[in-house]
Image (tube, rainbow, N blue to C red):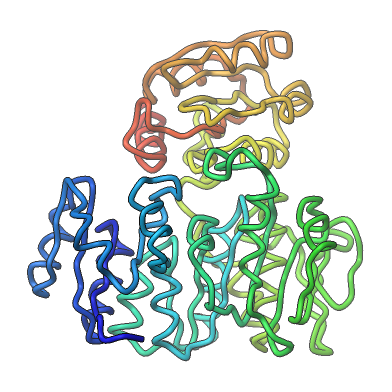
Length: 447
C-alpha cells in the first residue's frame, strides 16, 4: 500500500460511524461524508472522536483522493460518485469487508431473501446459551466494525444482506448459511434475477475445505445456482421435503440434525418459533450449532426459550376469540406467502404499502383457501384490488393502522386470525416497518 492513509466513508449511520472509529484506531486519516442529514447520536460520536465529517453533500475532491472507500449498503452502484470511484480505480468496500481484516474471530454468516434476522437471532441465542464469547452484528444490532474495535469476541454471528455482499471481496465465512433466494430488490440488480442470485452466493466466496456451507435443498433458485458453481467448503443441506444425511431434515414432525456422528431430534411442537418458515430457520441454526459442537441439550433449550422476534409473526392478542398477528417485517410477497402458509384458521389479511413491483399471483391459491377478506393499508391499493378482486368477496381500503385494525376486527369471525403481513414497504404511511408494526399493536390493544 502507498503512504496515502486517507480513507473515505460514505454514509454516517450505524455501520459507517463504526467503520470510522475502527479506521481511526488503525491509523487512517478518516473523512465521513453523508448526502443526507446525520442523526444527532452519530454526529456527537464523530465529534467526540475528532473525526472529520460533512452532511448534505459529498466533497468529491476529498473522497476521490482516498486510498479506499467504505460505503453504506444503501448507496446503489449507479450513484454518480460510485461510478467516478470505479473509473478512478479506487476500491469501494463494505464495513464488513473492512472490519473482517482486523479480527481473527470465527464468522457465522447468514443471508437469504427471507428469514435472515430470525436465523441470525436464533443462532446467536444458541451460542450465547452455550457460554461462547459471541458477538451479533451485520444488518442487526451494533456495528460490526465498532465491535471489532472495542470487543474481543471469539466468534461473530453476522446477518448479511445482498447489498453488503456486493462490496465484499476477501472476507471469508467459516460457516456460511444461505436460507433461500426469491425475487427481492431487483431494482438494484438491473431487474436481472441472475445478478441477485450471484450476489447471494458471494456468502460462500473464499471458503476452503475446513469451512461449511449450509443451504436449503428445497429452494429451487439455490439448487439451480449451485449447479454452475464450485464449492470448496463442506456442504450441509437442510430440507423439510426429503431425508438428507449428512444434513438436517424433518421426519414425522421432528427436526433431525445428523452430522458429527451425533443425532439431534426435537418435535416441532416444542419450537418457540412456530410456522413452516421457522422450521427452516431452526434447521439452519441447528446445523450451525452442531458444526460448532454445541451440546444437544443446549440447542433444544435455546429453541424452546427464544423470545419471538418483534414484527415477525408476533402474537399480539386474542380479542373476542380472534387472534391478532403482527408480521409487519413481511415487506415482500414471499414473506407474506410463508405467513399465510403457516395459518391453520381463516384469515383477515392486512396488505399494502409501497409496492416494489410485486407479483401477487403466488398468493392467489393461498388467499383462495384461507382468506375471508383483505384490508388494504396504503395510499395506493389499486394493484391489490386488481390481483384479488376475483378471489375474495370483500376488500376494504384503510389509511391508518388504527382504521385497519378496526375494519379487520369487524370483518373477522370468532376463531379467525387477523394477520398484518403487508408484502410491501411501509414508507407511504409510516417511518419504517417497525413503526407500522408498533402502531398496529397499539391499535389492537385499543379495540
